Length: 277
Image 1 (cartoon, helix red, strand yellow):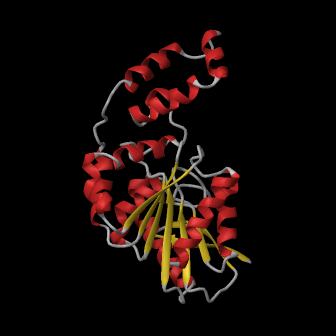
Image 2 (cartoon, rainbow, N blue to C red):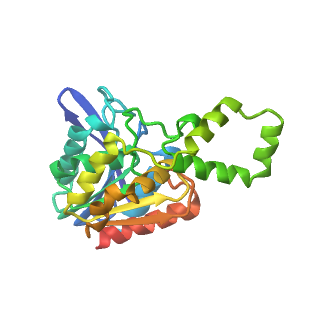
Image 3 (tube, rainbow, N blue to C red):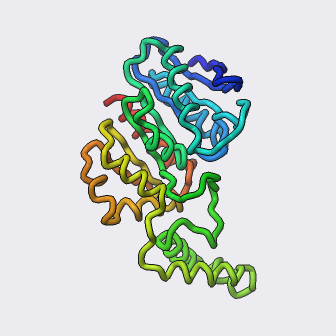
């Protein structure tokens, strides 16, 4: 496998990227979009490993640091301002590999949301969206603070898991759990319905109308995934669920980045299958 470290320009800013490929004549490529403020190697170099594994299957894979993150210059404006970065990255990828006839885009969390929001402007043929972000907060937080969990459903699931853990009960009895946060969490958990955020409503409209194959993959116990699943199952998302271009799959993992070995393998297999289709 050949790994090349390259760069391209957006105005006066320099964007750094990495392309992995074994077969330079591959006609299908994967571009990975970073979530939050993550660099292109991903948490614990997970995206670098994923790119290598996918490249070894015969596909070109590109990762890049959005402006203002990692090795790239410029200002990080958050996922809502990432459209031009993604457009430029895809254009560069296709120019570097002009033989590509299909380009698949993968994004996790707010990168998944960005891809969905801007997909009409992108030269892509398929989307893979993992744990899409649904909260009205441009400054994505990977580990959401307990009192600000994304939904009542997420809190209920989290508390149920803790009630089954003797160590959590011991921490409560010994005063090691913040009672203020606990009370706020219980109040939120009692809600039976969360109003859809502005972002969730935008994603609903995009998913309802999207006309390219779009695979949503959720980590079963991840908080962002729980929040997305709740809005996905709501009455407001009926039209999105009926769109035959959209499929949803769940991987049994609590890792936001699918970092555990089994989840990483399942995600990789699903990506490869999407690239083959």
